[in-house]
Amino acid sequence: MDYKNFDADKLGKADLEQLIKYHNQAYWEKGAPEISDVKYDSLMQKLREIDPDNELISAIYTPHVSSMGSVNHSEPLLSLDKAYSLNEVMEWAKKYARTEDEAFLIEPKYDGISAKFENGVLSTRGDGFQGENISDKIPLIELECPNYTGKLDRNARGEILVRKDRFATLQNSIRPNGITYKNSRNILTGFMVLKEQKYISQLEFAMKNLNAFLTLVDYDLFSIEVALGEIEQEWESIISEFEKLPYPLDGIVVKLADKEYCKSLGNTAHHPRGEIAFKFQNVAKESTLVNVVWSFGKNCLTPVAEIEPIDIGGITIKHATLHNYQNVLDRDIQIGDTVLVERAGDVIPYIKESTPGLLRESPLITNCPSCGSTLVRKGPEICCVNRDCFESNLQRLGASVKSIGIEELGLPNIRNMMTILNVKNLKDIFDLTKADLERLPGFKSKKINNLFNELQRARNIKDYQLLAALNISHVGINMAKLLLKEYPLDRIFEMTEEEFCNIKGIGPERAKALVAEFASNKEYINEFKEALFVESTQGGIEKPKICFTGKMPEKRSYYETIARANNYEIADDVNSSLNLLVANDLNEKSTKLAKAEKLGVKAIALATWLEQVEIPANLKQSEQAEQLELF
Ligand SMILES: [Zn+2]
Image 1 (tube, rainbow, N blue to C red):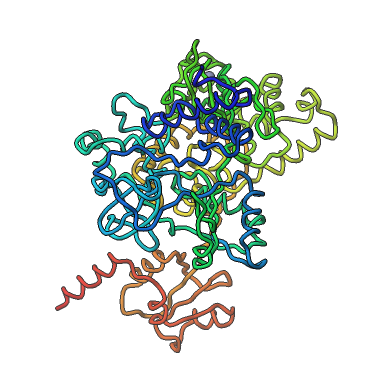
Image 2 (cartoon, rainbow, N blue to C red; image 1 turned 45 degrees about the vertical axis):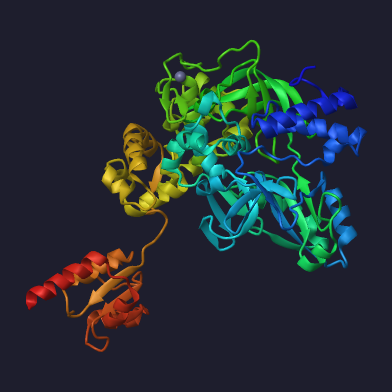
């Protein structure tokens, strides 16, 4: 019998039972699953079809844990009955709803180990009546319950799990005995079977970075109340909301909101009647990785998997994303491997898991497929830095054209412009005449006119659009506006690390990268400026203009500093574009006050204005220091 490569649909009852038992043992006792969840589910589903009452289906599996002894539960902790479709959930809900408005609670079904902390003892659910005492794991566990996150120091009932964010750290840091953890479930069972002295040494690294790496999520932490009639309508949005939570989930729990009524329904032999668990059906299928194509992006090369075509949810899938170079390297994904491809909603299909194939070939590359020059690593990416690389330039030009809003011009036409008209940069595109455009395949008079007019229109550009059009990593429209709020366009290319650091949201690492990026893009800015008419917007945000008048208690510069710190622009004179005139005394005779009144410009007293603004902390100190000197 082949325990890993099988087609559940072709198996009979005896084979199914044998396989399920084998993989239960691998999963629950050894903490080392040999097949994917999807594959395991296919066995269970087939068995359900041919023998719905089989004891393997209703059996309760308990994770093998290193135990300090048994604990008898004062109240049985039962597992939930399962539904595999929304229809099954609705059938159940309608059966127990007393009215159309019966309220139900919808909660995440956490993928961890069900446990209870009561009077200082932490125990697993076990068979529901008796669990294992795992109190030695308490120091590793943080509790998250309504209104509290912290030490496990109060009674709770929930699921022990590894949060998604912590898994990311752990996955890269601990690999005891050469075991690679494929998922958080895997890491959890791995640690639960360890005895204290063993895990302490293996966890040393992790403990340094994460105080408690396991979490007990209280079952009451998240829940959404929905009336019977709204369940179907709300279902998908609730699922997508739950998927954003930092916990691994394997389904949804639906229960009656009326706790007393729920309890009064009692239990079947194995499950409470007032609750049901909907198990996620993963839309994932296995295939073989046939080839990896390195596709050009605007800054780097992206690996795209070519797979043996599979059908997921009625759609034929031939390609899947491999994200970036580092991902392929870290996960040792090679051509010839068996891959599990997942497609969730509208997300691009991606490779969830991979198992080494018999014949393997590394898909990693060292030279540019277009120009042949040596590729350079930049963070998780691999990039071609040759300024004359045709494909890289095509992508960069395509991205620039797109970001300054020329809709009519796509990559195939830019490619033709580069090969036929020898276009090299944006300015070359803007300099094209109608006669030039005629030489392009498929360009007739109407199309030529449209593109020509669009180019003329696109020549007028705002400074932040231009900055974003440079395709500098992490500098999109928002970052561009942020930078331009502080500095004019030309000045940004001269900015120092320190100056970048002073801008909200930019840390030292990013500042360092930005200095280098801007330096290496300096030549492009000139290319753009030659081709375009750039309008300065100062980030598109107009600062209100302020003017001061009359004799004031402090030097004029003192108030001007406060005004600038509060995002005002200082004006010397009163005109209709002025937003605010500040006078020490509103009744004093002043030509500025008279002019402001005539023009309808708002004027306020200095004292009032000072109450409205924030005085910078360093200014307050120097003010105090001056006062102290006076005494
Ligand atoms: Zn190249």
